[in-house]
Image (tube, rainbow, N blue to C red):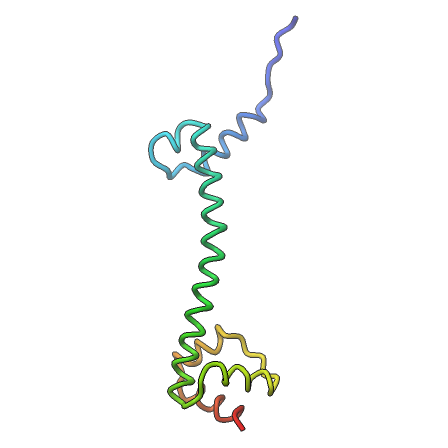
Length: 115
């Protein structure tokens, strides 16, 4: 039986994985099998923490809006309720930025939507 020479595809795949984990320590950046496990673990952590970061930022925005609206005498719940009644769809990120950077503008918005 003749000898079969393998192509470069497998080597290319392994080099790509080793390049992905090149910043890791020890065997995690040198040996293919542990590097592959490290890559899978890193991608799982990245996906989980992306969702967690989105959740945390939304909580932060709500807290900032609540603080600013309570300073003007209205709770967060009522503020959002009045926004929806007036059909003013301003997202929470923008409202939080306005409440932190420009308190006068936020209080103007609040005064205009509350009957």
